[in-house]
Length: 273
Length: 332
Image 1 (cartoon, rainbow over the protein chains, first blue to last red):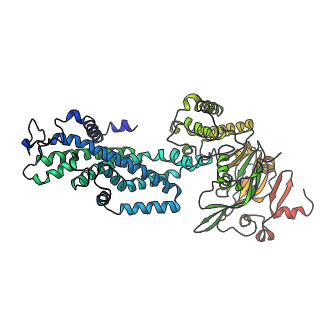
Image 2 (tube, rainbow over the protein chains, first blue to last red):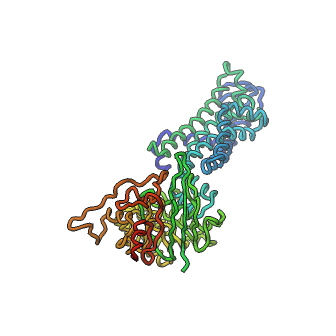
Image 3 (tube, each protein chain N blue to C red):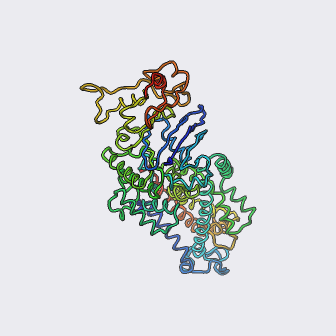
């Protein structure tokens, strides 16, 4: 059902294609890259784009093309894991809040409000400062920051699905609360979750790049897009290829997830049909 | 024989900001095994809340305040939650009004039947599936082997309600609570679905509490009838007692306000009766007999005190002051 509608949505298909391309590049990075992304080559410092260096070379003579290719891995790794992290906690917390209401709802949702009251990137910077600059910590920090978005959406859906008679019927069948939440309510909340997750992947890519750019993401030699940009910022005016290509990579990945997210929202939101 | 269900003085109130709504205000009734009890009354008279009280699933902010619900001799209101959960769906099951939304749209019909079975019985998936197919065949769903892998939206309303009946009777319960099970269906299908439900219940020896506002359906299918008004049972008796020898003015009014087959309302072109007044607010029930503001035959006592129960025939009883007055000259 989703697929047949998506195949008629041109922008959504473009988004999907971009994402598939990203995933393929990440998986096949060793075969696509022309150089070792960490290989320093003093002779080719700041070399402009050429047949040898497709995207040019950076201040240490590292091939920017290969670094951007490997950077895809870091971006996808961080964004997918952090969204899974956020979704796992957000779904459980939101479902509990929506199902039990009362004090559980108040406590959980007020905590979520507290987290949301900080600008996402600022809170992530704070968490990274505490945890230290490691890749897995980026996942934790971004995941934590995004938990409330999932919790809110799931809580809302649970509130509406809970009213349906089949939930009452399954209570009358003698189901436990856990069985009702996980077997009967959550499967009916999947649509908004998919949309939120897709959109959030885009935010996460952007946030990871920002953190890396600020020196709080993947530790420096690692070829994350933010790092490449960060290394290049001092040479931006003279050697613009250093910033353009990683910038384009970020733009393309974010665009892909946003296009797909919008398309899925149009398809899955019953009010827009 | 022991009653399958015996409710005594059940009171379920809803504590809202506007006050206390006495939805069920002292209901007493009983059902024998294999018997079909029709519970009739206007909307908001407490029929459904009574059913939910039996399962102890009264929605917030409702609370069961007092009373006893004896199911096969044990008081359901005193059972621990875990025991109660084991009874739900297994020994007492319920069919809801809306077949359209009583099945989970995310799973196939088979999944839901199999899940229901395996929740209460230790059997394999294959066995559960066989049993589910068999049950779907019993409720006369054509090609049950195929239908079992359909999603609810593939089925028509009548089929869905039959699937619900299959789910409810799957575990061979002792008591089935059917809350307006056919109201959402086409008239032609209503009778069919009801037939299946009653036939199966008789075969399995299941007692049914059949909640409806449709007197015609009750006349056709029930053994006994309880008439409810404003959270109370006002008259209870066999089908013939209620439909031919109704004594309570409310029951009489109710009967005269609907056309029933085989009963003329008057000479020639009969006229339907219209009961004056409105159902009283549950927040503010009138003192004495709750029906007195609308009663054409109210007397002094009706305003002051609730009428007591009186046996007026074998298995036929009512709560009305008229009976007390009549009882004095020595009438049966």
